[in-house]
Length: 114
Image 1: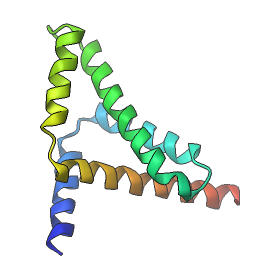
Image 2 (image 1 turned 90 degrees about the vertical axis):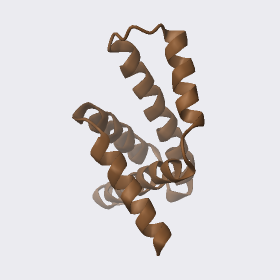
Image 3 (image 1 turned 135 degrees about the horizontal axis):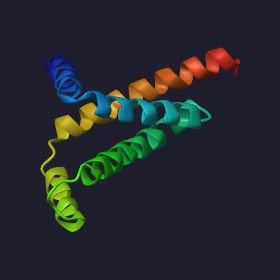
């Protein structure tokens, strides 16, 4: 039960730290992934692809924000942050995205009738 609460608190911390633009980016990617998959068999692949797209979108957003760093310095910094990512945080992102993609897919299947 402790793992469940650790994951829940990590997911809550992740979502609470996002600004509105990050939430919209995540929502668009999650909805697109939920509509793109044909069955629940593709959920793991869709989740991994959505996480990669979310990371790439975050990188592009940071790059377009006009920081003082060059693109190569930013990618190096981003890569080092990715390597320092804890397994609990990565698991929380994966479970959160997978759950929301599954919900979007299920709602789409219910509405379209199959």
